[in-house]
Amino acid sequence: MKEEISASYRDWLKEQDMPKGKRSAMLSALELFSKQGYDGTSTMAIAQHAGISQATIFKYFKTKDDLLQAILEPMIKNLLPEYREDFLADIPETTTLRQTVRFLIRDRYAFLKQNKEVVMIFFTQVMTNTDTRTTFNHFISETASMFIDYVYDTLKKSGDLQAGLTPAAVLRTIAGQLMIYFLQRQIVLPDMTVDEDADLQTIEDLIVRALSKK
Image (cartoon, rainbow, N blue to C red; front, side, top):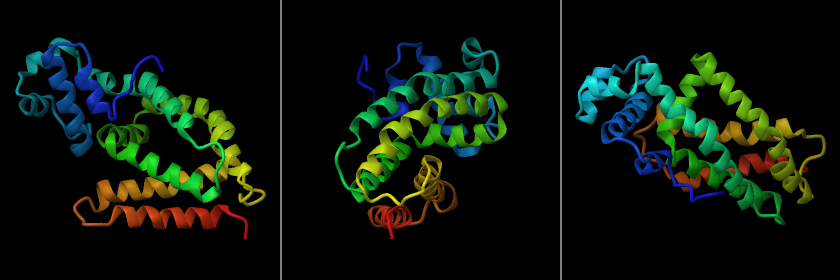
């Protein structure tokens, strides 16, 4: 990596060299799009939240969609690849299946929490916007071979991975459990008091049982 990556997209955005009004518009849009959805957020609401005028927003972004793309594009095209490289480099080389699963679950959940605003925007846009879905699918296609080379091979080297499980099946098992829990915490029951450490331990146990040799 050429430079240190911030813990979250919001932190990264705050550090970028851009006019104050542009940054304020992007930060407010990031928050409101994640909470209310893109269609449920007007440029007026963004301006009021940011403490700027709508004219300031349209000075930097011709349309609301341009503002959305200004938020998403650097994450997809620049930051996600760099986050991915850091993540893959941190995976322990020699470990048990459980230790690898524990690292994957806790590391990726921490990433989702730190970037929950932009993750929620991604989630809704990938479901509804063809261009965003195409761009994101391209990123996933590039990542698939790296998943096999680093994650799947590490799990196989542990000697505990169930025979016959394909990389796709392993990815679905891990990512599925993690995303369901993340969405439950952010959308379904955001105000419910939970013991996240205990919940992550339960998820780890479920995944280990699903992947390990019987």
